[in-house]
Amino acid sequence: MTVRRELVGGVEHRPIVIVDYSANWPTRFAREQRRIRAALAATAVRVDHVGSTAVAGLAAKSIVDVQVSVPGVDAEQHYAGPLVAAGYVLRVRELGHRMFRTPDLAVHVHVCTAGSGWERRHLLFRDWLRRNATDRAAYETLKRSLAARDWPDMNAYADAKSALITEITHRAQEWAHTTGWMPDAH
Image (cartoon, rainbow, N blue to C red; front, side):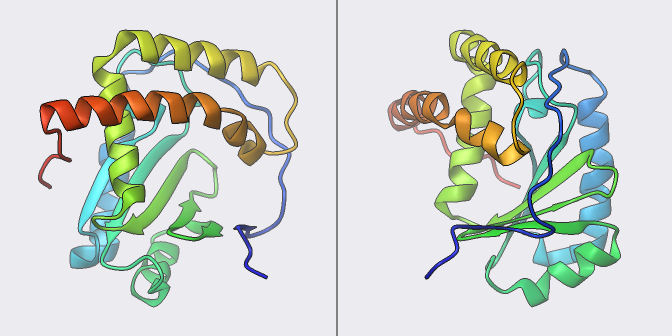
């Protein structure tokens, strides 16, 4: 039997708190980007700011999401040790994705394979929300509504957003096809 998502350390009950956009989030990302590049060197093909904190004006959990693209996410021996040595802790292991975080839970580092669908979807979603006010507002409204509920863990909250994320992603993909959007060079 294949495990869909392994939560290293098990389920954690945490409140979901959505706050207004902070101009400090890009600064926090830049600090983590330097830390990750120092730890991984050339193993990090890309290091991008993703998630809601990467979209100016969008309310979010005050957790900076960093996406690190590596040659192969399954080859953990090339990046897990250096990330742990840099102070990150492995939290999630799933097909095509690993997630590390800081001990203070303020930064999530998502590791994926360079050129993968995972990488492209997250960059496209971010770029679409940066330019589409209607979807950005709908996403914020849903997040604020869901945050008012009690969730067994943050993954359940994230799963509850998936239907809207899928809808938005379809519109973003149509836009990407029409405009020729590609992830920016890194």
